[in-house]
Image 1 (spheres, protein in one colour):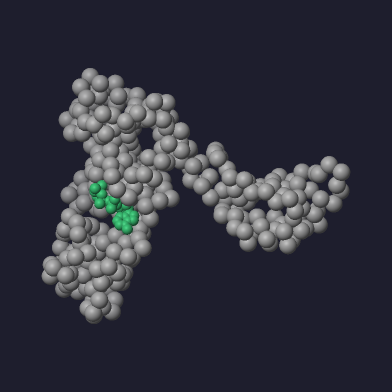
Image 2 (tube, helix red, strand yellow):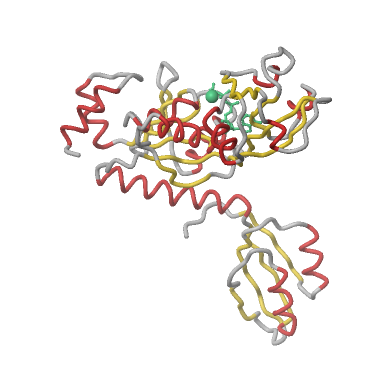
Length: 324
Ligand code: ATP
Ligand code: ZN
C-alpha cells in the first residue's frame, strides 16, 4: 500500500484521541502506538511488562494515553474488546489482549467476509483463563450432546458457534454483553459459556464447569500492514525484550562447589539449565565451581538434593535482565 493510501485510511478511521492531522502524520511514521486495557485484569501486568522492557513514560492529562520518554512508544488505554479493532483500523500498531478476544474478533470478521488485519506476535505469561460451558446445579448434563436444542448465554457467540458446529450440535446462542453467569437464574438461558479462571464465580452462582472450549492467556497482536523501518526495528527490539523479561521471571543464577566425581549427578539436578560453566577452584584438585542459569523455579528441595549429592557453598541469585 502506498504511503498516501495508508495515511488516508488512518485519518478516516481515527476515532480515538485525535490530535491534529498534522501531528498524526508525524506520529504515524515514527512512533509506535500500543493499545492496552484501560482498567481490568490485564492492565497492571501489561503496563508492568512495558516498564520492565525499559519504558519510562508520562501520563497524558486525559489519562487516555502515556507517552514514552525514552522510546518512540506511546500507550493508548481502551476497553479490551476494542483492541483488535484499533489494530485492524491501523490506529495502533500493537495491542495486548486475551486470546479469547482475539479469536472472537477474528471469527466475527471472517463471518462478515472481512480479512482480519491483526496477527499474533507472541503469547504472554499472564491473563490465563479458559472459555467454558457451565451448567446450573441440578440440571442434567452428560456430554456436549446435552446442549442440543438448549439456550446458551455468552459474550463469545462466534467461538461458541464454531464449537457447536464442530460437535454437530444445534443450540440457540443467547448473546449478552455481560453478567452471563446470572442468565440461567433469570430464565434467559439453560447453560452459559463464559471465562473461568479459579471457578469461584461459577461456584458462587451455583454453576459447574462442564466443557472447556478455549484456553486463553494475554498476547501481543500487531498490524500485518508494513510499517516504517524505524517502527519495525522497535517492534523487533520490544519483542526481544519481552522475551527476555518472560524468561527472567522464573530464572535463577546458581553458584556452587561440586566434587569432580559428582559433576554429572549435580548437573542433572539443576532445573532447566543448559550448559553450566565449570571452573577450577584455586588450591583444590577434587572440587570445581559450577555456575548455571536455571530457567525453572529453584525450590528448597532442589538445594537439599544438590547438597545431598555433594554440592557445597550453594548460592541462588535472582536474574535481573536476560537477552538471548
Ligand atoms: P473492559 O472494560 O476492558 O471490557 P472486561 O470486563 O471485558 O473489561 P476483564 O474482566 O478485565 O475484562 O478481563 C480482561 C481479560 O482478562 C479477559 O478478556 C481474559 O482474557 C482475561 N481473564 C483472565 N482471567 C479471567 C477471568 N476469570 N474472567 C474474565 N477474564 C479473565
Ligand atoms: Zn471487555
